[in-house]
Image (cartoon, rainbow, N blue to C red):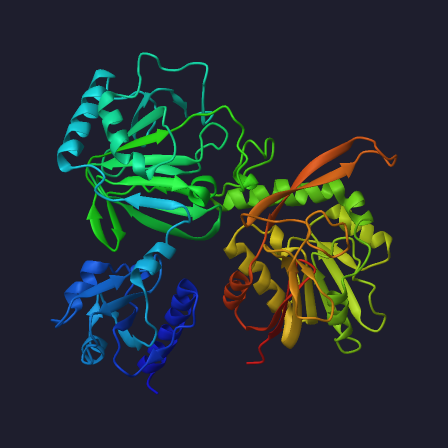
Length: 570
């Protein structure tokens, strides 16, 4: 097999894996011509858009569609009838210097469903909700309104805004319900639009924010405040198409969704309460095709309320989560700050109390340690209070931890430990026979930093050495001994080893109640610890980025994922 053929095969396998994840089914390739063609090396990640692929295609005897998953290195072509010649034709083509790797897909794919899957749950877009004439009238009206106000009503560098009904305070992200804008009610021209969109909404808007965007302007990602607005956020888009980015708080890829001009966007459910939405500051959007931005006006309509929010997403809810820190990350320094304030500093404060609650070794960890040959050298990275350091007498286990106070507890127990951060372990490479990292990786804030930790673990191992990593699971279940059955956990149970928490997002702050007195019923001090809770697919992808590592097994045990791995010999 030639070098190009090997590269093509590897690329197609990777693309097929991502497509299978999107479709929630196993996708396969075939040599038999079908209606679906996988175009490897021809996706958004290659800076290739719809018009680029259309230009490269031959004259086809039928209609066709293209599907571009966001941020992936492939696209999918759907033709109304199989075109046997297309593989040979595209195999010789380059698009923007990228050699295309085409292959027929055996599965029947539903493009409408695929595009819907790429949207956050609860997001509904109704196109052409108003006419071109209504759009022109609305834009002229609000441009005139802006000029009356001296071209700006708020000191916002990204856009100009106007407020009606109630004024939205961008410093507090709240509305003062005691101060309605009696002299600035929702304009009659907008009330006419409300009559037309009524069949698509379930709220009665009493607040309007008008955002005026010049080409290149945007709005940072955010979630509209839960406590002050009801269950739907509405937006009527005027003047220009735009790509709005949606993402869960630091979980998964950003999903760009095209918001067409003259459309109504309804954010409800998960898309309203959990997903962050925003518009990047750029002059063109490259989703499906390159769209140049023009002057755009959005009418954001909301219903203000004084009733506390009781949504199903407490991690993002100010009503249910008052006083709890929010997870916002935009730089490496932010990652360090969060790990410092909500991990390192907390464990220094709670070390003694934490150690009193961590005394029984987990059976799965003990099994792994017992499986190592006698006289093995084992590193426990993130050893905590050292409960695994004395597991066996015929092996040598040493530990390290970022907490000086936890290291002190280990030394009091006669264990060999030193203090260091797992992101920078000052030990020689290939010195250990095995390594364990128990309940530590979930305190690391970003995928890049997690990969660095895992690479450091592998670097400690001799070739052929083995490792074990455990992390909290996002979906926590009750383990049933000696069966394959997994049941949802009872969140009120106090039984040892049962997951007691349910997470609606992956980046969370979990409270720790530190007793300030040994006497019962005395006051306690609350601390918050940062956790990233994992799903299995994410773990496999994360470990796949680590050099010289082979995953042996990923198993679920006691509300945690247990990952065993080996350092490759070659």
